[in-house]
Length: 299
Image (cartoon, rainbow, N blue to C red; front, side, top):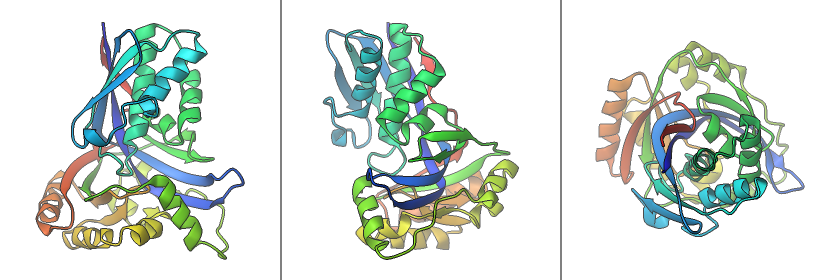
């Protein structure tokens, strides 16, 4: 018997970042939108915990107990007093180290898959509590759709979305470390009065209306200057996407994936073609959102 769970990538349509807290984290107002790039995590009984991975850039995914999927299995097993004897196989399609929460998605997928495989019967609240312990983006990977994340991003308020939003994602030639981007954010902000992060009502209204033109003028990412400071070539990709007709262009989360909002599916395909030919990125993907959160496909 095995259980397979599909989990989505995310784009941040608003990422407001506060000053560093004493614990090193930052308060956030993080408006997540799940999009139709997915990983699949399959849990199968095994004699011990092990992780395997296939797909684009799978060689960059750690296969030891530092892997977030492995940590999810360990956390659930500890909570329910059982051995974490499971083989977790990750089929990657979400960019690795790309600012689209691929590792967090795998974590949520493994948690849901192990819960189903082991019959632990954990409530949604328990699963979300474990998610929050494992990482700031993990709860949203479980929930999907659209949500406002506060605290360090783990406290979620689900949001209404009135239609589909079409995106183009340009994959960069190398990754960016999320902690390094936050350190650069802190460095760039030294001596500045950084306001408390709050959700922009205009962003929430545009999502609720399903209006890409309205969303385009409100998207923002406070980490973008830090990502561009560490990876200046991303500016060329952003410029190429804007020139290709994107309604909006921004770094996705901590980067280095860049995200381009399109009017519709045809426009997204056209923008993707121009970006692919631009020489400013190594690959291009199209997707739409909102997408469902962690979903059991079969057992």
